Amino acid sequence: MSIITEEMRYRQKLCEYAKKYGVTKAARRYHTNRQFVYRQLKKYDGTVRSLALRSRRPKNSPKAHTEEELTLIKKMLKRNGVYGLAEVYVRCCKKGYTRSFSSMCRQIRTRGYKEAEIRRKSYTRYDKIDGKYPGDKVQVDIKYVPDDCIKFPAYGYKYYQITGIDEYSRKRVLKIVKEKSTHETKKYLNDLERLMGFPIHIVQVDNGCEFVNDVDKTSKESAFEKAAYELGITIKRTRPYSPWQNGKVERSHREDGKILYKRKIFTSEKELIKQVEKHEKRYNSTAKTSLKFKSPNEVVKEYFQNTSC
Image (tube, rainbow, N blue to C red):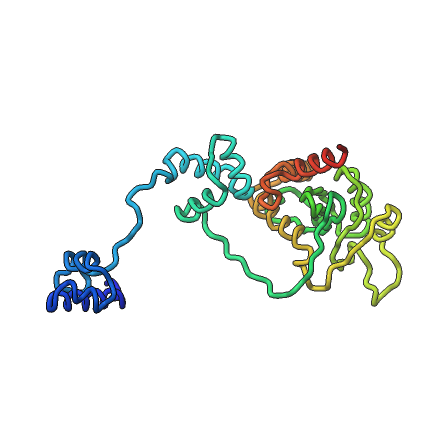
């Protein structure tokens, strides 16, 4: 049942007055022109619903997406959707797609090609400091590898993934370890600059014991802190119980769970390490919306090419 609006009631009064006193007097009384009155009288059949506003949507549009374009979007979304819509857009453009990124996203949303993600908004105020160049600031964190994807004898060991992500380029370095300790994070930090390919100035970590010691319990530096001091790297701690301050590495961990650990089964430790290395290479060569549809490797390459000129 359609809703009767005030505009429909206004038009009905206009038509009734015009029938009784004429079109000219009705146009003067209701502050409109006679052509408008004639149009309403032509539609009016005595019921208010006959004066309902009709849709102005065109029956066809010359700029609408073609079936070939929609098929391409659906195909690329199925193949690369897990890596993000930016990667889908770049793949479509390589196949001859000429529309904008927002236009592609609108088609995906309105046609139901992908379910909408519900995101919670954080109301905690935090003034973040982004890296201004590669190596300016790197977020480091450690993630537990789920037992569900490990289908080989672990002999009581738990596997962890140490992740470092450069804030400027989003380039990542991943490493699988068997224990959550400062010994492993120290070895990871010693190799981080070499694997990143550029010097690092600041490393941001949370207050976990695998990185730093609790200042309320001891004044000694952890092995990770000593290694950072020897390398000339500054350590920045996040606020306690504030994981969003390490948001880039936390988000990348969420993507790891969705892309890698929920889709793969590992039958040996060697295969686990190999798949993580493969995943790291794919991530660093995948286009990101935040990087203006460039991959982390492309951003790093362009930065050093421009600075060397």
